[in-house]
Length: 75
Image 1: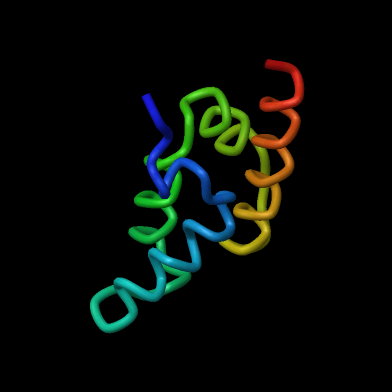
Image 2: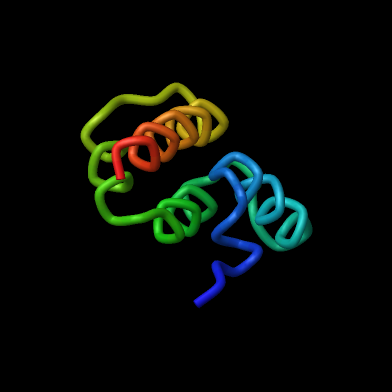
């Protein structure tokens, strides 16, 4: 099974696309956008991010990029 285009995106790229799609409906840095973003991530990455402290949604996405890269290199 081929990965979807969404699965090929880095988390920060997916967040950018989500913000673009919802720019008139959602606060791009609000709690709903954060929740929707986290729900798109693999469960193991989501749990690690929820356990940490982040300054902004952009910082959270950057950390998610790092964690996904590490996860893929160990798989």
